[in-house]
Image (cartoon, rainbow, N blue to C red; front, side):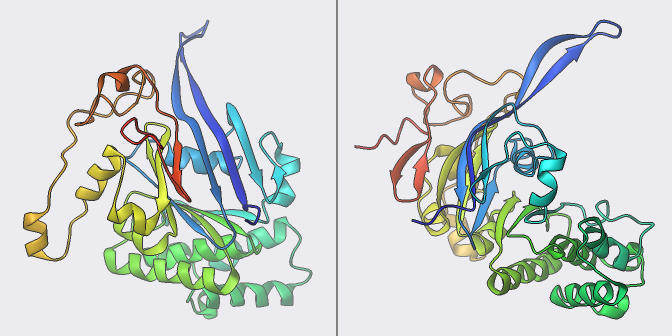
Amino acid sequence: MAEPLLRVDNLKVHFPVMRGVLWKKQVGTVHAVDGVSFTLGRGETLGLVGESGCGKSTTGLAVLRMQDSTEGRIEFEGQDITHHDKAQMRPIRQRLQMVYQDPYGSLNPRMKVNQIIGEPLEVHGMAPDKAAYDARIAELMRTVGLLPDMADRYPHEFSGGQRQRIGIARALALEPSLIICDEPVSALDVSIQAQVVNVLQELQERLGLSYLFIAHDLSVVRHLCHRVAVMYLGRIVEIADRHALYQEPLHPYTQALMSAVPVADPVVERTRKRIVVQGEVPSALNPPSGCRFHTRCPMAMDRCKTEDPPLRELGPGRSVACHLHVPQ
């Protein structure tokens, strides 16, 4: 098996909770990401799904080294980047980029589109002259389905879907091998979502890109991703091929997520079994002992309250963290 493009091992991101004005004292710790491990291959899309606040975006920021990690190891293209400083990360950022969730807030309203897309080229010295700079921007705009003659416009003159295409073009400017997509279509209308997802797929096929696709819309994830990792309260509870995950989810939390996805056929929808998760998501400031899902799990056992289930591999590419599924 080829070496993965990205390897994340036991990643933890904790935030101290401080109290006091003059003399601050730490009174607690938020366990935003608490022992996440996964791999991502070249040309692959890994979906990272879960409820809001489960640590998906923090995981993405930690992989980018935009957020310091508390523990764990991050390897990108065979290189350990866990403790790289800004100077060490500078050349690596050419290969590691991000598309943000909000196409309205992620673009500078005072900059024209050619400046937004061209800024990475200037920062990394990849535009030797004005002609090469303009040609590269025009090429990037055509790549994402925008007309080059729009390059002199400001972001407010574009629709939400067009703005997200501008964000994708900016991420492509340095020819990265991995793009982290942080819910890139959640702020867009459904019809526009499909257009942006199609652009991402076409770019992956043409350029051999890898995506870490963070989302909570399971229908988009099913369409775009090769494998899916399900997160709950800072932990990954299940990883599987998308077909296996959607056909037979194993973890009770994954089963509840899948049962909440509407089906277009009204006959199937009426007869489908729904799994309703009771209660509120526990606080990451004081997570439950044992399995973190046991306070809401309809199948919880006594051992779930005290024993934290590890993420066990049940088969090739299939892992689950649940006492109900122990490999024989």
